[in-house]
Image (cartoon, rainbow over all chains, first blue to last red; front, side):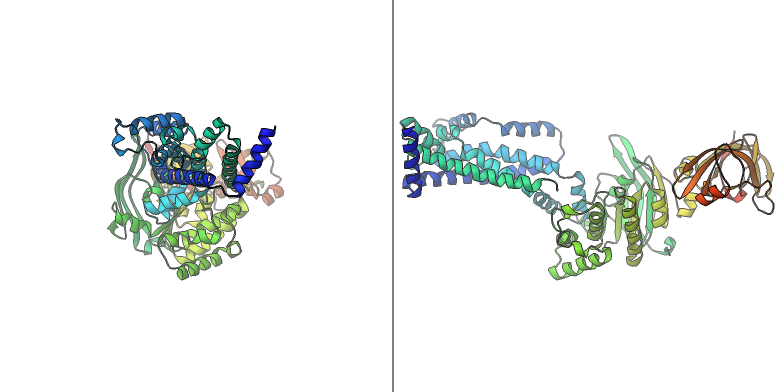
Amino acid sequence: MDLIFEGIKKAFFLLITFDPEVMRITLLSLGVSGTATSISLLIGISVGTAVALSRFPGKRFVVSLINTGMGLPPVVVGLFVTIFLWRNGPLGFFGILYTPSAMIIAQTVIATPIVMGITLAAIQQLPQKLQLQILALGATRLQMVWILLKEAKLPLLAAVMAGFGGVISEVGASIMVGGNIKGYSRVLTTATVMETSRGNFDIAIALGIILLLLAYFINLILTQIQQRERPR
Amino acid sequence: MKMDAKDCKPNIEIKNLEVKRGGVTILNVPSLLIHAGEILALIGPNGAGKTTFLQTLSYLLKPFQGEIFFRGKKVEANHSVLEYRRKLAMVFQEPLLFDATVFKNVASGLKIRGMKKKEIDDRVMEQFGRFGIGHLGHRSAKTLSGGEAQRTSLARAFALRPEILFLDEPFSSLDPPTRDSLIEDLEHILQQTRTTAIFATHDRLEALRLSNRMAVMNEGMILQIGSPEEVMNHPVNEWVASFVGVETILTGKVIKRNGGTFIASIGGQVIEAVGDAHFGETVVLCIRPENVTLSTRPSQEGTSARNVFSGRITKIISLGLYQKVHLQCGFPLVAYVTNHSLEELSLAEEKEVKASFKATAVTVIRKGES
């Protein structure tokens, strides 16, 4: 039990004094996952909306593909990104394996289907005739899409949270393509794995607390959205 | 007072409009002229094509064959469609409001057109006054009752000052008192603004009340179009007759002609009607229940009713403010009587009464020699 108490005591010390290493790891985590989420938002919302609003042969297949993508195992993503970025691989000439850029790529691949799938569902849940009503008010197609997105802003916010939540706590792909290099590609999750295996529980617990706080924060926003959405 | 539709310049002209889905023609309107300021009602059962017609006319449903002319100019794909669409407005059965305040909802169409804030405010206030929803301005649209929401949807449409207003069964999901109140308001506002309106409904009384021209649709086609009085009292065939509420539809043969009238034999009885049917011709006679008078007095002296029959009441159905009485006079006959009359005459099932209606109250559909 001493181990745990000592660990927690030291962890709080690290957090309260803004230990530089812990801070660097946290900021890198936010940076990498934030960037990945932003890119996945751009791709996810635009493609998700486009698919939701169009009619084309094979739409069902595409939708199930997106839904499958939402459950993509991160290690598999890590595997494929690694292969692509490997020295002799197709994109090896970029030389970005074991860099934060590679982590951003992997996390984007993980987050994009999540954002896409939730956006798709959100837009499809809007009343069918709403599109017609908006057009009947004299909107151009672009204006219509914008208004629909505004109508779905709460589920879209949920999509952002889900995407971010998915990647900030992801460890498999991040270790594989990032390499967990100190001061360079070490993020909250990868650092926690390493410190735990070394028995440095104080740092590990400190990082763990930060991750928990982030998870709680995300959940808080999601819950607020859920409560707001409930029919009165 | 309703405007005479024929005096106004045509607003929309339709030529050979056809909509096909999966090889089936769901709408076929060879030609139609809609005049400025007229209020046209499209009535018909579900699936008749009313919604398809409205959505095609407003260019919301594509593709279609045929041409639509607005004020003489053909509406064509791309930019002229947007221009055309911005001259009209559409209200659906569901209010379809946005997740925002009532004010923002009513202003939404104006915002889409890039209008300035001051003008938007003025127009929204104008509609608030017209529809009596000013006190709801800051409320979220999600908290409105059905009637309030539909009022907001109408206000949103009228704020655009549309040249043509399309309404697709706008009152179907409202309860009767709310519906009545809204119909009254809409009637007033349409007259005030002289907006051309085309609305679809399956409630013929609503159509009768609001419109100055009525089109009966079924299976994608307009079966009859004319003033409400014309359509309701002179249906062009049995199907239309039945749909517009003619309760007695009888088939018989002409056995005598008397100048402008003839006598047809039906169920062992004879009925006199006005018309040109030939001797021996099969005719379908339609008699509206409002035109049948019941009496318990032994003889009918001093009336101009030529058709008087003794009959037995087989069924009485209450319709609230009046009663529907089914009779058997050798042929089935339906009459409407007021609750007062029902009591006064002590009408009850199995009672023998005298039913009468004028020859002029009989609508004749000629079927030719058989």
